Amino acid sequence: MLNKEKITSRKEKAIETKKKIYASADRLFRKHGFDKVSVDSIVEMAGVSKGAFYVHFGSKNALITALSVDFVQQLDLDYKSYLESFPADTTASDILIALVGKIADVITLTVGYDVMKVIYEVQITKTVNTEAVLGYNRDLYKIFNNIINQGVQQGEFKTELTVDTITKHLIMAIRGLTYEWCIRYPNFNLKEQALKHFGILLTGIKKQ
Image (cartoon, rainbow, N blue to C red):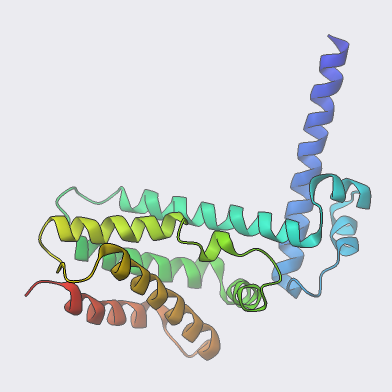
């Protein structure tokens, strides 16, 4: 019984240590960017030892990757929950436009410019594994794919292009718009431009 209590206590302490490292790293990365934050500064803010850091993460890059995965997964869960609120008879085009507006709101109001700038920096420099953000296995890609597939099955969208092709181009459009927002910040209204751009894209795939 005593041994089980000790094991439970160690596990709880390990979980707490990992949470402290996560929280400290997230705060420092948002403020200074990935390159300017060291493992030493993370453990100092977290109040843990350097050895404890390496028990949980093999390197700073491993921590950044873990944070990115968690961050993206939470965003995609939020998008899924948002779509579940729509009535069953909502058209695919209306769902798509609503989702694009939601994504623009999340990027500008929740994620913010500073974090997006760091995310693009990491993607461009490839200093960490960005598969969680860029990969086509990401839930956001699947969400777009399901919407387009719904539109095709219901006869709303054309069938000349495959669902996967349309989906990939829509994802590229979101990334391009977000990049444009980053380089023109704060003089670029992401939501306004995204809704306008996707309205144009929809005219190309909707049946007349």
